[in-house]
Image (tube, rainbow, N blue to C red; front, side, top):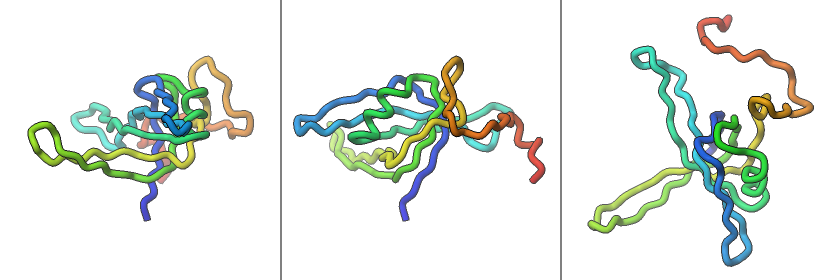
Length: 128
């Protein structure tokens, strides 16, 4: 099974393009914090994502740089040869579903049916 679920923040504004066939594709990058700290500094992974058609239009319309985002999708690889003849591979997430986290962002409205949770900033506060 190839299933990826990510929660992070948009690194830049999404880029929506319409292909010659009329298909819409939206590319964006999400910063996802790692659960552990190395030398007391937070680390993040920057993950390239692609959303197609209605999902891509949704991302382009409602998300911008710095916004939180939750993604459900699949991991895909692309293989190619660079100009020096070296074989390369890149990985990205193709989004099947995209949602707002509990709140869209500072100053923006929250999702109306979202429960009222409190953010936990330190894992040590968890009871498990």
